[in-house]
Length: 244
Image (cartoon, rainbow, N blue to C red; front, side, top):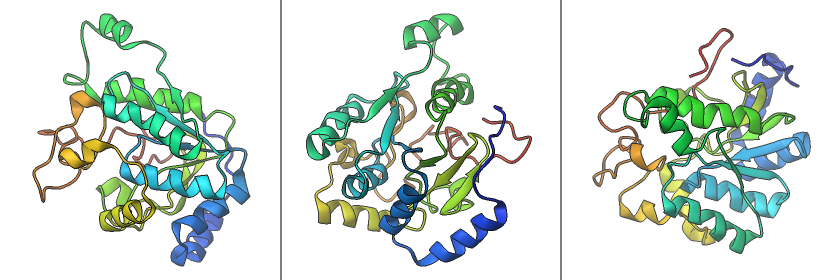
């Protein structure tokens, strides 16, 4: 775990903020984040439906907010193609953040891929460590999590201290449902990953993402057949936590 940086808000101030923001729309939360932190505000996106909604909102509120994608080397081609679609639609270039080792170097070092044998280690090396480097010098980051997706996300707040990365984390869609996300996409013609139309409600790295039967839990295709449901980026870490 990296040394935690001093955060701008105390726990008491964050509690007051969340109470005040309880009735805020995602756009109002984003405007607050921009007014409070920009230009030291950034966003990580995996080009999921929720992330595309936030990119649409930021394009209207403050398109200069830096947005990046953690390019693990294992993403679907359709996911990477979203970068060009976003650029054409909004004029926003999403930065690709890479791990230190290419896929070939990484698999050679470990004698093959780790995503089946040690998926937590793979996520740590190819997502968590690159994100730590990507957010150096920033004070806050925006995520697109929804609270109804997993147990860890249910425990999140609209604005919270993210001690794993030493930042304030802003979750503008935390109280939205899947239906609200898709209503927004269709109402505003937001570009979205075509894999969503092929049975992939939640999309991560290709080797670790399976389609989900209609009506199934939207996270059940992630690391299917295992108890793992998170890469670790959104697992709340307390002082002394493991970081994975």
